[in-house]
Each structure stands twice: as structure tokens, then as C-alpha cells.
Image (cartoon, rainbow, N blue to C red; front, side):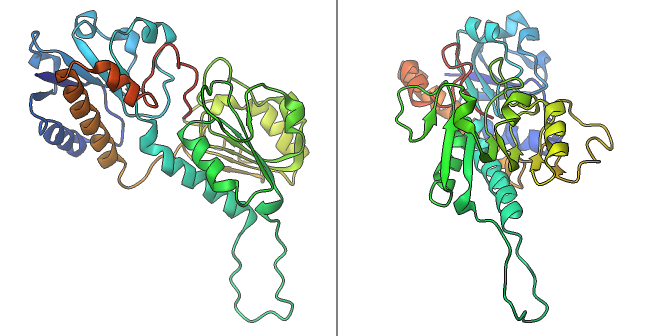
Length: 328
């Protein structure tokens, strides 16, 4: 079996060194040819397309899509894939959510511990030996999203928090403690930690708004490393202004990149520039993920077992049935 691999676009952190390494590694799979330009196309050999957030799937050439057998989108989320495109696709679309999941979890936990547990540096032995802090043990946590990130955060926080709830209406056929599938803000009364771990879709757009903020505690900690538009930014500003003891860590924004000075007048807001999923070995892990998926896809196809491929990689496959469920 032969496959052509073509990257439709690269991100700013993927330079020529990355692209050369990607080509070398993927061509290590027998039968794979990595093409750098569409002029190199062999019209008789099917495609694997590597996409990212700069790719607009609906603008891909029909002649390419007709020969496409697999799309690998090694980014988090699927914001640039329309539901209509996914419905029409007669090939698997694999999302790279697992690549960044641990990094985003660590970012979220870092925010949590930095807020509640700033470690003092004693220059001398204090007489009182006091540490005036709140404990996570006393916090009511709500995680919005029950995908790779939401599940890991639930498992991490459940042993140390007073209560951890997870809201996700798209979870199916899974027993999960404290899972809420119906949006009922009365259940969220006095939440003291809110963590966003969901994907952006019509049901999550401005899910966290003025009405929702009215149910949070006045000193609530809000962490959003997912998608900016899940939170109404204007309503967030009003909440933080009204409740100076509340605090928010934002890694994502309604408009990216944000303008210089954006939200700088809020002392209870910490901003980062969409870096929660960034880490030293990110490019290495992206290529390793692509290698695994392509190799497995070819092995399953040789055995005429693509249904098994889709079943075994169900947590990563984007199709019409699970379009709305995926977290960041």
C-alpha cells in the first residue's frame, strides 16, 4: 500500500527544521511519500492530509479530497471543521487532543496551586509560624468538559477537594461520578473553583455569562485554558470588578491575539498568550502522534479492518455523531 502525506499548512512554531524532521520520520513508514508541494502529486496515490488551525477544510481542492483517505489534525479542538464538512467526509478525521492534554492539565493545576498555595520564603525563623491560606480541601470545584483533560483533572482533584463536579451533556455510555448532563445553574451555587475544559461549539458559546456568574462565590477562582468564547468576556470583567476577592487565569480570549493593554486594569486577572498546551517536546510529540496514526491506519487497511481502526481510535475520531463532544 502507498500513501502520500501532505501538510496543508504549518504553525508559526513549526519551521523548516520541524518540516524536514516530519518528512524524515513519516517516510520511515514503508509506502509513505511526503510531498512538500502540490506539484509533486502523483494522482494515482491516495492522500493523508495533515492540517492545523490555519487550514480551512471547506476550501480544500475537490481533486485532493476525492483521493484523501485520512485527515490528521494534530491540534486541540476542531473549531475550523464545519459540521457539514465532517458529515460529508467519507474518511476518518483524527484529532490530536491527547498530544497537549497533560500539558493543559499541568497549566490548570499550576494556576490552582499558585492561587491557593503560594509558598513563603522565610529569611528567618518566624516566632508565630503561621500560614494564612485557604485549602483546596474546602473548595467546591466545577469542571466544564469531560474529555481527556476534564477526566484527568477530576481524578487529580477529587482526593483533595471538598467536591468536584463535571458538566458535559455529550458523555455517553460511561459511568462517571458527579457527572452533570443538564445545565442547571442551581446545582452550581457557591462554586469556588471553575475550570473550563470544553470545546467551543454552539452549545458552549458564552455558556459562562452574567446569569452563571451570579451563582459563583464572591471569591471564586476561574481558570480557562480552553476556548475564550466559552466565557462572555464582558460579563467576566463585570464579575471581577464587582468581586475583588475573585481571581481569574485566562490563557484564551474572545479575540486572539489580544491587543496591547487588554484587561490590564484588572488586578485580579492573570493573562497568558494561549500557551497552556505548549511545551518543549511539543513538535516531537506531534510527529510521533502522526507516525503512530498513519502506521496504524495502513496496518488496519491492509487487513481490511478500517471499522476496527475507527472503533479503537474512537476517542480521537471526529465524526457527525460526536461532533459536539470534544474538549480542547
